[in-house]
Length: 119
Image 1 (cartoon, rainbow, N blue to C red):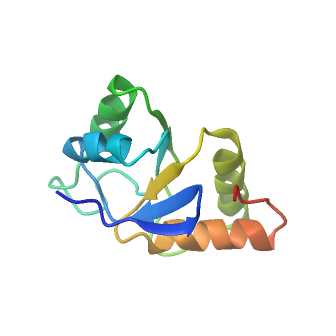
Image 2 (image 1 turned 180 degrees about the horizontal axis):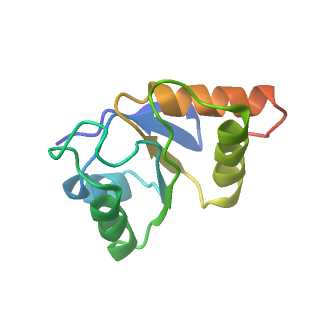
């Protein structure tokens, strides 16, 4: 599978749901960290679990963070937590959810709330 990456800055990108088999492509693309913003089971049993993706990422030397946020909305606290993550993990960072929109919205709100975004 080819990663459908959308760069927000030169150090942060978002994409739709990935699986463990996508991690080699993420590493090859130069990513150092992966953030999962999608709760396990959101789409049912066919959705890859964050632990599967996390295990694959860590096995390839990538940092991984699980920051689940529902698709029905996010809070300022969740956005600030996302801001803290993107400022603490090695860059470049790949964040994913169902479509990438949730990640983008979290990062956007984090910046509105005063968080710096790695550029």
